[in-house]
Image (tube, rainbow, N blue to C red; front, side):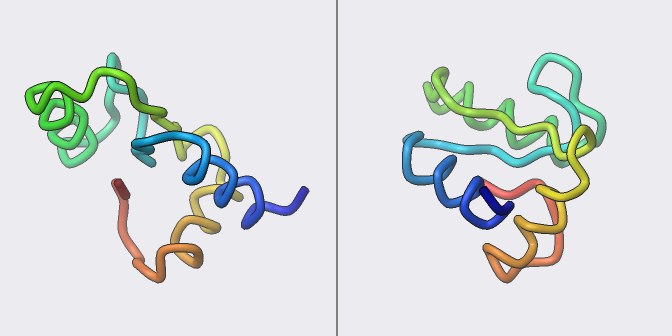
Length: 74
């Protein structure tokens, strides 16, 4: 399965997906930390968090998929 198909599957099978640097428990940038905290404050506790630092292919793929150059992506 190619990266675009993996991303498409993630966003269609989960109600909320956060592509971020790090994890909600250990974010690796302030923007990613803020995004995870906002979701939790809004009562969204069940979301898929994808650590883009662990998979550079997904990092680049999300930029193409969303046509947006920066992360985090929600």
